[in-house]
Image (cartoon, rainbow, N blue to C red):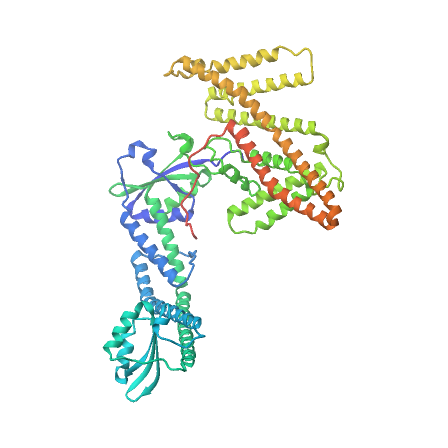
Length: 640
């Protein structure tokens, strides 16, 4: 609960012919995080890494092909839970067959889509000028329109010549051996069209007086052409859909194969080989150690497996991966921890402390039964989201709402109204001095807790000098409490304050000042920069302790300040509501109260959240928090 999960370092040596099966099983287990053993064990630094470049290149090409086929089939493929034994060559063959089936369909569809766009463009141009008779191409901005006669025997040649050009070909009537024909194309193809017509002995004729009717005929022909294109596209879409349905199963299994292969390559990246064996090392949770070792023994048979506790390795604790493990109640508060950093392995996990302090601070600063229940309700609504981070954030919002509602009941406030329910505890505006005292006392408790956590962390690291003499060490904590006792006695106006307080405070500060000497005596530490520089650093530390702890303690006054501001905002809203009641009646007055509550929930809710985080990060975490470098991320079948 107060510690991150215990980690173990597992190294294994297996024969090369078994390594693929071993990797596959570890990935499926999803509890093994491979690591470069050469960074931990110096004696294996000369080993050769497994060759994965060729395999990785082939897999990347395979994944690109998979994405392209999925795009063509308009499918979002989810990896199958059942993983079949494919080879890269067999997958390539499946893709080749699919491409052969789809290429002609896709090509024809693309051509039809282009043709449809062209015809739609022609139709739009024609409709823009429909109030005028159909005229020659020079009249239009984007169209080239030609009306003329051509020998009937040249008609097939004309059609073939215009095949590669977007156009509308409209034979109108026969005149002897010629056919009166209307040709519409794009203005950009004018030179090509005119050359084709010239080569085929095209005879241009004037547009007749009834060209308006001709425009209508052309429009109808364009409509028919568009409908034909749409029908053919729809038919091809159905054919593509049919192929998608037929191949979805095999593609889902191929997706699983690709995901597995990617994870295997990621594992192989940290593996090293001899002539006949492969060495693989990584992190597992202590509770999963036996599961991993048993699986390897079952697969590899003859193998060598070595297990070491993380604490027994000769590496910095910052390099050990961290896994925070909490139940569903406290899991959402990991978001607050992770946004600051990862607590180093072996230090106390502050999640539970933060959960309690954050909710108390938020509720105290935003205490209102009605608004709190509203926040809780909104949080429960958002919790329906599928995204895990959003779910956790919505749970946090619900928790904040419940805390706000509890403090609202203690303050006797429901949407700012203090006449509906009695205050179970106090009303902040009626006991301002008491609220400030409680805030300061709460701050002293949080700061003291931070000092204690730092002392425990130092004792776990067997750094006794830090446990005693650190700026958040035991001596500093004693000096802090002696100073609080001294100031408290001053406030109660005692005439004869025992001098022992000042003597003990001074003694504690002297001990902190002498820290360099104590380090030399007990740690056998050599001062490279000289004692004078070290003593100056100690003097700066003492000044930081005096000023820092004073600022830290006073900073908690903001809890009282925001609880009073919360009540003050309601007073302002109610006063504005009373003034407008005489102008706009009860309806306007009620609207002001409703909008005022919404404004407070949105604006002050955000500000109070930031302040609660700030007090935890700067006044609490600053006393003890040591960051780690990495989160425990085992290889998994990501995407399944």
